[in-house]
Image (cartoon, rainbow, N blue to C red; front, side, top):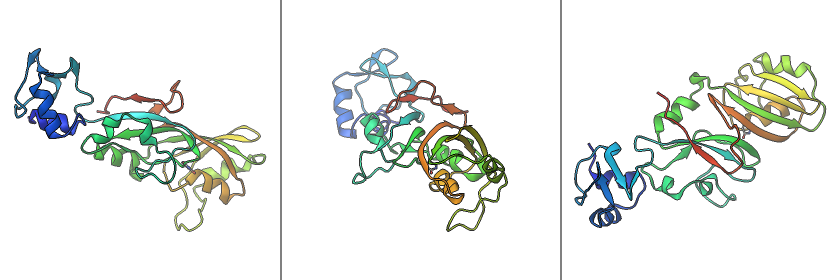
Length: 228
Ligand code: URA
């Protein structure tokens, strides 16, 4: 069992010192009873702070509807980051939250956020074959022959020596399509279309594995259950 101060600090509620102070002031309870000693060993589920249970005590998983113009890096300098859209406490967790894979600055849509390293691996490992769905708008009329080309498993991206895995393309209108990928190479959607002579004008990810955005508005996030 973790110590109360270590637990609260690792969940982003403050430094060990700040936590010790607010524990002393009587804001933390176990089963309704005030706990005043910061070194008490506790079960995370039994603890409340200001009457609220602790946030994601066994690891955090959330989805964010990334808006256009935000970058998925932690460092600034390249424009606003997705982390500015999330509660600051999530960055104070140890480890801090990170995105599972990335979306380009000019791509919108679903991105998962977690502080669980194994989950990042589970969702991004090529072996995991997690399905990602992208809504694509291009600059000129789509050719139905692209469907077979993308499904063939022979599309080569510039600078790479392995072809892309077969991908499913559904043409939804002359300039729009839905592309389903099982891998996640750098700028993959844009580069796949570029390899065939199309420029991607708009890109939005609507699905990542079992998760869909549903009615989550741009810049909003929603907590998810941890997968079993
Ligand atoms: N493919 C891209 O080209 N960009 C993304 O952000 C995601 C997939």
